[in-house]
Length: 164
Image (cartoon, rainbow, N blue to C red; front, side, top):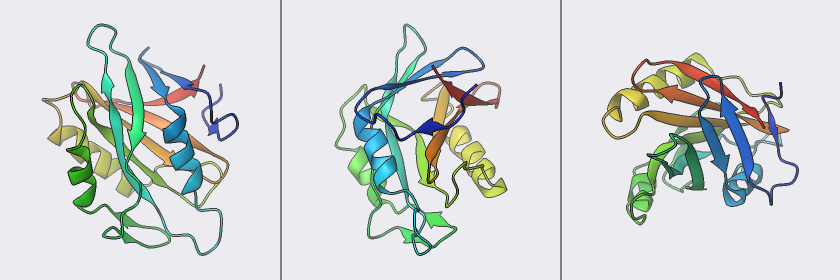
Protein backbone atom coordinates (compact mmCIF):
# COMPACT_ATOMS: atom_id res chain seq x y z
CA UNK A 1 0.00 0.00 0.00
CA UNK A 2 1.13 3.52 -0.75
CA UNK A 3 0.51 5.92 2.13
CA UNK A 4 2.51 8.88 0.83
CA UNK A 5 0.78 10.78 -1.94
CA UNK A 6 3.59 12.05 -4.17
CA UNK A 7 3.72 15.51 -5.67
CA UNK A 8 3.99 13.98 -9.16
CA UNK A 9 1.16 14.67 -11.60
CA UNK A 10 -0.38 17.47 -9.53
CA UNK A 11 -2.74 18.31 -12.40
CA UNK A 12 -4.82 15.18 -11.75
CA UNK A 13 -7.36 14.60 -8.98
CA UNK A 14 -5.79 12.35 -6.33
CA UNK A 15 -8.09 9.63 -5.04
CA UNK A 16 -7.58 8.32 -1.52
CA UNK A 17 -9.36 5.54 0.34
CA UNK A 18 -9.40 5.04 4.10
CA UNK A 19 -9.56 1.72 5.99
CA UNK A 20 -13.22 2.36 6.83
CA UNK A 21 -14.10 2.59 3.11
CA UNK A 22 -14.54 6.37 2.93
CA UNK A 23 -13.26 7.92 -0.30
CA UNK A 24 -11.57 11.30 -0.69
CA UNK A 25 -10.82 13.38 -3.78
CA UNK A 26 -8.05 16.00 -3.55
CA UNK A 27 -8.24 18.62 -6.27
CA UNK A 28 -5.12 19.78 -8.16
CA UNK A 29 -5.20 23.32 -6.68
CA UNK A 30 -4.86 21.84 -3.18
CA UNK A 31 -1.96 19.62 -4.23
CA UNK A 32 -0.24 22.67 -5.68
CA UNK A 33 -0.60 24.57 -2.37
CA UNK A 34 0.90 21.62 -0.46
CA UNK A 35 3.82 21.39 -2.90
CA UNK A 36 4.45 25.14 -2.90
CA UNK A 37 4.73 25.37 0.91
CA UNK A 38 6.70 22.17 1.69
CA UNK A 39 9.69 22.67 3.99
CA UNK A 40 12.38 21.83 1.46
CA UNK A 41 15.17 23.98 2.88
CA UNK A 42 16.83 24.12 6.29
CA UNK A 43 15.35 27.56 6.93
CA UNK A 44 11.73 26.86 5.92
CA UNK A 45 9.11 27.51 8.59
CA UNK A 46 6.14 25.24 9.14
CA UNK A 47 3.16 26.26 7.03
CA UNK A 48 -0.49 25.31 7.16
CA UNK A 49 -4.09 26.21 6.64
CA UNK A 50 -7.68 25.10 6.52
CA UNK A 51 -8.96 22.48 4.06
CA UNK A 52 -12.07 23.61 2.21
CA UNK A 53 -14.50 21.15 0.67
CA UNK A 54 -17.60 19.12 1.34
CA UNK A 55 -18.94 15.76 2.39
CA UNK A 56 -21.31 14.11 -0.08
CA UNK A 57 -24.40 13.28 2.00
CA UNK A 58 -25.45 10.51 -0.40
CA UNK A 59 -22.14 8.65 -0.65
CA UNK A 60 -20.27 9.69 2.50
CA UNK A 61 -17.24 10.59 0.39
CA UNK A 62 -15.28 13.82 0.81
CA UNK A 63 -13.85 16.33 -1.66
CA UNK A 64 -11.13 18.84 -0.84
CA UNK A 65 -11.56 21.60 -3.39
CA UNK A 66 -9.35 24.31 -1.91
CA UNK A 67 -7.17 25.25 1.05
CA UNK A 68 -6.15 28.44 2.75
CA UNK A 69 -2.50 29.37 2.43
CA UNK A 70 -0.22 30.68 5.20
CA UNK A 71 -1.17 34.15 6.42
CA UNK A 72 1.19 36.87 7.64
CA UNK A 73 -0.67 36.76 10.98
CA UNK A 74 0.16 33.05 11.53
CA UNK A 75 2.84 32.26 14.10
CA UNK A 76 5.39 30.04 12.35
CA UNK A 77 8.68 28.43 13.40
CA UNK A 78 10.68 25.55 11.97
CA UNK A 79 8.73 23.01 14.07
CA UNK A 80 5.52 24.74 15.16
CA UNK A 81 2.55 26.59 13.75
CA UNK A 82 -0.37 28.56 15.13
CA UNK A 83 -3.04 29.44 12.57
CA UNK A 84 -4.45 32.94 12.96
CA UNK A 85 -8.12 33.86 12.77
CA UNK A 86 -7.54 35.09 9.21
CA UNK A 87 -8.12 31.52 7.95
CA UNK A 88 -11.66 31.48 9.41
CA UNK A 89 -12.37 34.85 7.81
CA UNK A 90 -11.31 33.48 4.41
CA UNK A 91 -13.57 30.47 5.00
CA UNK A 92 -16.57 32.80 5.27
CA UNK A 93 -16.18 33.58 1.54
CA UNK A 94 -17.33 30.07 0.61
CA UNK A 95 -20.98 29.19 0.08
CA UNK A 96 -22.51 25.86 1.14
CA UNK A 97 -21.88 23.02 0.59
CA UNK A 98 -18.24 24.18 0.76
CA UNK A 99 -16.81 24.64 4.22
CA UNK A 100 -14.25 23.57 6.80
CA UNK A 101 -13.38 19.88 6.53
CA UNK A 102 -9.98 19.81 8.21
CA UNK A 103 -6.49 21.28 8.28
CA UNK A 104 -3.13 20.83 6.61
CA UNK A 105 0.39 21.64 7.70
CA UNK A 106 3.98 20.81 6.81
CA UNK A 107 6.79 18.84 8.40
CA UNK A 108 10.46 19.01 7.35
CA UNK A 109 10.69 15.30 6.50
CA UNK A 110 10.11 13.14 3.46
CA UNK A 111 7.65 10.80 5.19
CA UNK A 112 5.78 13.00 7.69
CA UNK A 113 4.54 11.42 10.92
CA UNK A 114 1.96 13.09 13.16
CA UNK A 115 3.42 14.37 16.42
CA UNK A 116 1.66 14.01 19.78
CA UNK A 117 0.76 17.71 19.42
CA UNK A 118 -0.82 16.99 16.03
CA UNK A 119 -2.90 14.12 17.44
CA UNK A 120 -4.13 16.23 20.38
CA UNK A 121 -5.03 19.09 18.04
CA UNK A 122 -6.90 16.78 15.67
CA UNK A 123 -8.92 15.33 18.55
CA UNK A 124 -9.80 18.85 19.70
CA UNK A 125 -10.86 19.79 16.14
CA UNK A 126 -13.16 16.78 15.81
CA UNK A 127 -14.74 17.47 19.24
CA UNK A 128 -15.53 21.06 18.21
CA UNK A 129 -17.04 19.99 14.87
CA UNK A 130 -18.93 16.81 15.83
CA UNK A 131 -22.31 18.32 14.97
CA UNK A 132 -21.36 19.61 11.53
CA UNK A 133 -19.58 16.63 9.94
CA UNK A 134 -19.12 12.87 10.29
CA UNK A 135 -15.34 13.24 10.01
CA UNK A 136 -12.49 15.65 9.40
CA UNK A 137 -9.51 15.29 7.09
CA UNK A 138 -5.95 16.10 8.12
CA UNK A 139 -2.95 16.36 5.81
CA UNK A 140 0.72 16.60 6.68
CA UNK A 141 2.87 17.66 3.74
CA UNK A 142 6.45 16.44 3.74
CA UNK A 143 9.29 17.19 1.37
CA UNK A 144 8.60 14.24 -0.98
CA UNK A 145 4.84 13.93 -0.64
CA UNK A 146 1.97 14.17 1.78
CA UNK A 147 -0.02 11.82 4.01
CA UNK A 148 -3.74 11.99 4.73
CA UNK A 149 -5.84 10.94 7.74
CA UNK A 150 -9.58 10.82 8.40
CA UNK A 151 -10.80 11.31 11.97
CA UNK A 152 -14.36 10.03 12.56
CA UNK A 153 -16.48 12.13 14.89
CA UNK A 154 -18.74 9.32 16.14
CA UNK A 155 -16.05 6.84 17.19
CA UNK A 156 -12.97 9.08 17.50
CA UNK A 157 -11.25 6.63 15.15
CA UNK A 158 -8.30 7.77 13.07
CA UNK A 159 -7.69 6.18 9.65
CA UNK A 160 -4.77 6.74 7.32
CA UNK A 161 -5.51 7.03 3.64
CA UNK A 162 -3.96 5.08 0.79
CA UNK A 163 -3.73 6.17 -2.83
CA UNK A 164 -6.06 4.42 -5.26
